[in-house]
Image 1 (cartoon, rainbow, N blue to C red):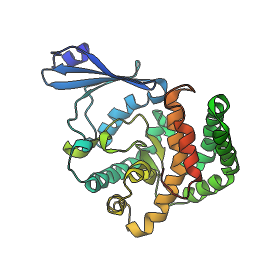
Image 2 (cartoon, one colour):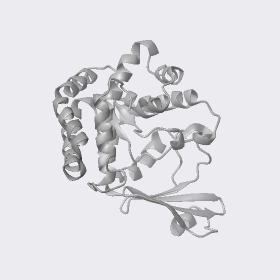
Image 3 (cartoon, rainbow, N blue to C red):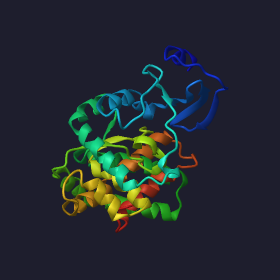
Image 4 (cartoon, rainbow, N blue to C red):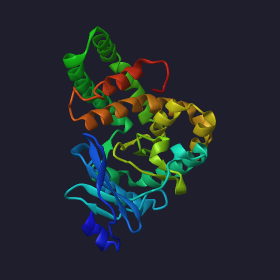
Length: 287
């Protein structure tokens, strides 16, 4: 951190603290003569976030923070502080998601670059395979810690595979091209100033509408949904695609949890993958 700050013409003025430690990453914080900086050390499952930042900055500089430094070998990322997030701001979420839709449209022609740096492929055609991967990991959790209810849910999911495969086949025919899906899009991951998006460690390449799974699950506001969709076409004509993309995207959310947990079936969030897979059985396309 100190070495890179010097190269950037900055000086650390306070102690380094470590406010967050998780199995998928840890973050260090420090005061400098030009404000707070953050050093993120990524785990193996989220290491692609380090090369992703410079790529995003090149393709959409107005939508992400400018990295102070990246260390590809050690998988470290040094960022400036982005200020308050949308969680603490009156800024309209509909406006923010309209900007996010533009970001996805700008990135769609660069899917091959995203995949080349390690962003995981969750496009519709490959999702039946991803369903199998998710079930293997969830099955290990159920075998280790599951009770009767969990085993029943698992059996129901096994029987649900054909339906899920059909969803994937339908989504693969959708004319909207794949792009980057943040896959953890909520108000705490968007800076209010400039509506810049961050914390890309859960992102995947997928149908762009899958990005609505989390924000709409927290607030199913059709005005917000339609503001996002307007960037892709007449919203009323795209609602069915949103619902299908979100249903298929539940498996991507599951696999992001599995990736983050690294096989630790005793982790405090160990039940999250099964819970996300179980939401496939719901009538709702949301979580």
